[in-house]
Amino acid sequence: MTEAEENDLRAMSDDLAKAAENLAEPRCVARAFATPAENQIVLTMQNWIDLEALRSPLLRLELPEPPDTLEAAARVFALTIHGLTPKEALLVAGAMRRATAGAFAMALPMRRPGVAEGGGDDGFGAWLPLFAFLISECGLDAASARALPVDQAFALLAACRRNQGWECADVSYARRDVVERNATTAEALPVAGFVNSEENDV
Image 1: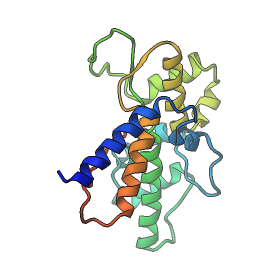
Image 2: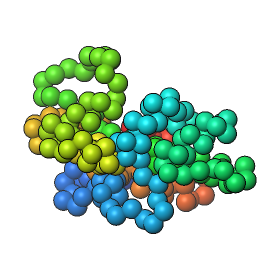
Image 3: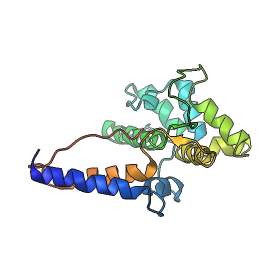
């Protein structure tokens, strides 16, 4: 490792240490609750449920390839690929995948203090426990819970558990901002002399 790389790692370590003390809202949280831009695709709880019913590859962050599969996914978002060129249809698919990935990236595992990791799959799937949380603990009616963006639902769950004394079991939102900022900076710099690595935010 070169001296420059060591300095970069040291600077990032300092940024991570300061992130927890920063009183500003993490940027990823602010983006989740900000007013969506015009024509921005947003994955709602109902979209998630409908994509699950279709067993859509989008939920595995894969692009639906057959036209009928892609059209079915597009209709979930009130879109269509009819009349589009293959390139245009691919752009629609990419936008849906980015919206899905961005929503799921806000999932933040939490655990009760003193409880070890583990437990495994209980057979309930992923969206139902979150939907139940929105109704039982957030007090939303079913229609409001269905309309809520998935990224906001995940953030509300994490914040609620944090307020109940649970511990963050993954990279916190504030620390994700630091990692994201450094990754963006690294991408903007010349490749020579820099180490590029991928970070998993989920």
